[in-house]
Image (cartoon, rainbow, N blue to C red):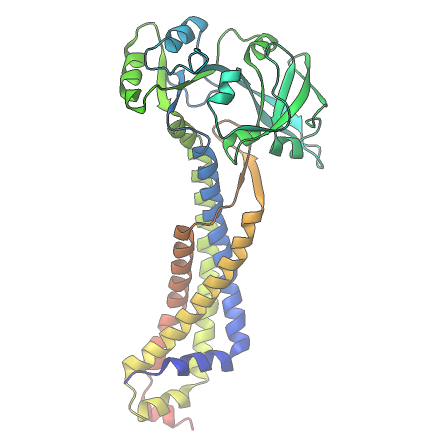
Length: 388
């Protein structure tokens, strides 16, 4: 005969103080676990959405980032004229030759320097990225010392408001607009004219090229031709794959750190749940003996105490998940280990993260309550009733 679920719930309510404290401890662990998963999901989504499926990135073989890469002008010309490259409505090829460098800017408030990506591009570079739009001001004029900054950069760094001037590469630059990149990695960049930036930084080669394919099915042919051309020393990646790879090192760090903290905190939470359940068993010896005398089997007693632990775990999971969900309104910035530049992204809660979080909470509840439940189920009826 099984113990009614209503009995289990009433026992949790009668001991609501200890139940609340245990649930609170579980909720804090779940909060840490969920926020780490949300942080990793936000990082990956930010960098994956940076790329367009039909765009490909060309960089030098053996390099992982645009900052390390170089493409000489004659090589860029060969790549641009490949038959797989799309042609725009204006008759120009959809290929953007770009240079990417890092500059140091002062953060607002704490006056600490941080590396920021500045990208030299051409007007076609904006056309290749439909997620990027001018939010305020205007686009920089080709051939000028004008730059546009991402909205998140304008909010976090000094001297980046429209009309302000920045000095780097021994030259003064004027901010003429801000852009919104839809939460992608471009939201952590500054853009300017590629030729002017190359002159200022004394660069003789581009960092990378972004190319729109005339048809997505031409990717394999384009990649093979670039790899096999003896004049080139470049490799091709789909833009989404390229930017997804940029998250690898930082994602690994976040996961290892989050897993370590979650394990340490969860051990404490499980010990707390176990102590609570052992105290509950000790204070209910007579009650357990009475249930056994009424005909309830050992398995029924075991089920009742396991259910108490699982319900506390579920309550802690829901509370921690609700607390973590509020982090979706916050943004986070850190240094990307691949590029060593400042990267801004948001916490993202997905259904998959919610399911993993609740399962994690239930496992903690079960681990903390199973041994006390076994002890309660093994109590002898005579010994239990003797305590009356």
